[in-house]
Image (cartoon, rainbow, N blue to C red):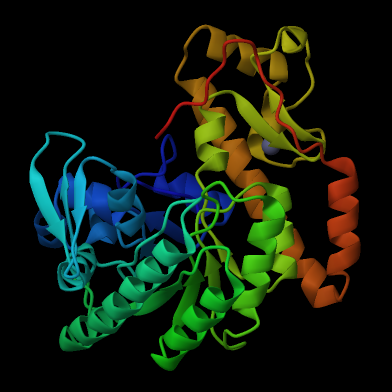
Length: 357
Ligand SMILES: [Zn+2]
């Protein structure tokens, strides 16, 4: 899923996302609640109609964002009170209010309100956050069933639960078992990609997926690089969302079969080859690294548009190749070959800092 935080996948039109091949995109409940507000989105006919996207949509629960607002929030047993990062106005998210907001936004898949514990945190805090997540998941289910599971657009919504438990095996197992007991249509693995080591993340994923039903989708939230995705697929994950392809694109970082390149680097000034010689996207068919470097240097809006298109195409192609390899029974070979050629560390340019969304 490309990430469409503010009801737009930055720099892309819905038509371009379709052309690349995406069927599902993500919207952020926290951001959409603050601006333009779910009431307006509901009056517009739901987020699909409001944004002109006729594919499927998923909204996160806003939990990750409000728990990241340290200093701007207060956690109670009932929910979280927080202040808007835009204008300082006061808001409260409870399981019931988040379900109402997600219903009004009208996505096809909605996420239960959860607490993503920080990393590192004490074992005691990981227990507390997990237990709160469980109580809130039960309340989300009750609220969601009370709404008759219909989105603003009139179709059925699917409520996914989020497994927490940090990097602790007993907690991950307890959390997976609890949520599976709620019999939801899909499950997410939350609370990862928050600073833990890749080995800890991979273990936590494996402990969790071992207990999730095989016939329901498993979604790993907020991950990741192509290698992270391969690691997670190997451990049974089906769905991903990540800002990397779009956010890095706006910083002139492009994903290629040989790794990440930064097109701002001087060595691309007269490189008249495509971003990735092995990519068959329209950007690579028409444009050169030299031209795109020039666009970024001249602050032309086309630069980020072209790199975003290519990066999303690269990720979409990666997922399609993974599916094909699984069907053909040669995922391990595919993973090894991809990893052998792919350089993990992104190129950096001096003084270059990744911009936040
Ligand atoms: Zn390309």
